[in-house]
Length: 102
Image 1: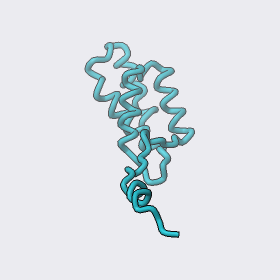
Image 2: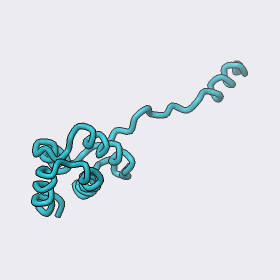
Image 3: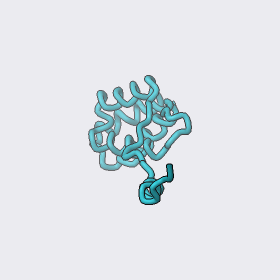
Image 4: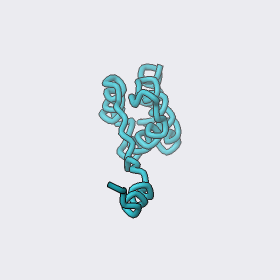
């Protein structure tokens, strides 16, 4: 039975399906670090959103965000916002920095 050329053309002309969102897995220890930073008040919602956006840019081949990557990005975001942080909160962050990021 001969193929219908119109049907073939419409199939080959259809756009490729591209996922709307990237979904990455986060290692449990990395997720726990983010939870801890939020619970301690070091990351607010806006800063956490920035961390998440930057982590999406990481795009690891494995599809899993590891603790060192999350730790680095969270530290970058905290450092970026340090000047706008309340002096007392800044003092606490500076005291805890070594425990959280080394």
